[in-house]
Length: 118
Ligand SMILES: [Zn+2]
Image (tube, rainbow, N blue to C red; front, side):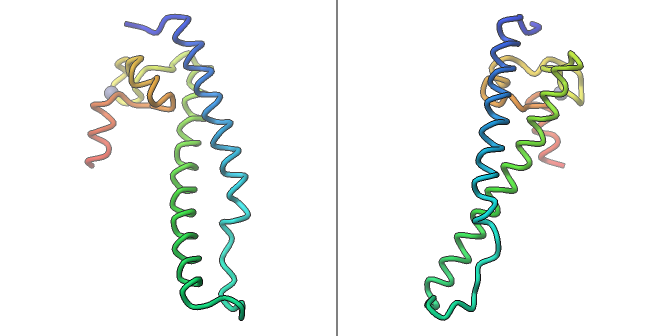
């Protein structure tokens, strides 16, 4: 079933919120993601290791958020092209349940799974 107007406006709003949240979060963590100053004399060995681990986690998280943001922007662009909700690989409808959970989805679940496997 194609998306109804109500579903489209709901998903468009969700996508907008998602993009805003990701942009805000990435802006917030941008400063903290800079390399740790390792030669601070006041910093003990353990806290140095802690700082490096925290930074790695933060960086991994930022990479994931940047990827999601790119998807979300592509999805928003597809709204403008009136192609939102159609799988970019097979052209089938992605389905409203999946779009509600992941409004940035560009692929249906079958194609997404196939892409992750390859
Ligand atoms: Zn597909």
